[in-house]
Amino acid sequence: MKQLAKLSALALVALAFLGLTGCLQVHSDTVIEKDGSGTANFTMSMSPAVLEAITEMKDLDMDQDQEIPMFEDINKEDLDKAAEGRGVKITKFEKGQVDGREQLEIAIDFKDLEGLSYVMGNLMGGSPGDGMGIYETDDGNFVLKEAHYDFPDQPAEETEEIEDVAPQADAEDEASGEASTLTEQEKAQKQMAVMGKMMGAMAELDVRFTITVPGEIIESNAPTVEGNTSIWAINAGNMMEQQGSDMEPVITFSSKGLKIKAMKE
Image 1 (tube, rainbow, N blue to C red):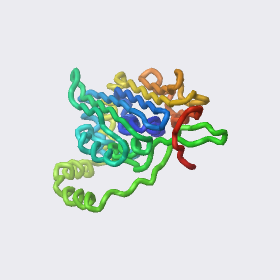
Image 2 (cartoon, rainbow, N blue to C red):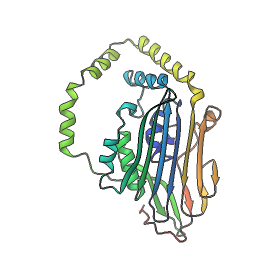
Image 3 (cartoon, rainbow, N blue to C red):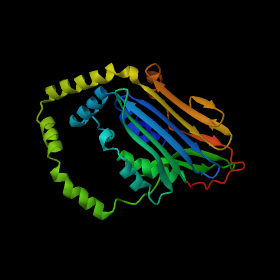
């Protein structure tokens, strides 16, 4: 399931949760224009029970493969700061309760996939530089696939601020200390209880990612292709079928009439 994080730059934050829980409703749509710019729309929704279980997972160190971003920590100020100077604009940011569920809606305009990857990488708080890119193929067409960017490190002054604030996080330290004092048996029991909550919410799973490219698709590894749109859909009914599959997006499309500055291998 970890490979699913490559589906879309916008999907990164959602899939940090999905890789461990699988109990979310996530819709992400990325549309790329003829010059490489585009729009990305993202909606994530989860029940209070799932949100509580994710918090417990962090306290029990169950997020070993990825750092799970906490829902309450996601804010527009951080996104705007990351977008500054990157050719990215946050055009919509709404977070709150809808029908008793926590919901997040984000809409983004981007100049290129590098800028989008940077913004979503900051939102994730995970592996910096991972995202999507467009490369030129040997026959002169384009291929959209995984890319890694050499983004600059965090400025020193920001690092110092974080170090100064960290000691004040007494509540977090106390929770971490409590988890560390549990016996292996107690920890295992708590982990089983958390996973039980997740399994109970499995029917919530409704994940759909789409990537629309500006040229005719020659080949795509998406399960479904409609016109120029590649579609990945995961739900409680097909999740076991998707597990273990190569879900990294690889979309080869025609470069005819396009003005995209392709990346170099």
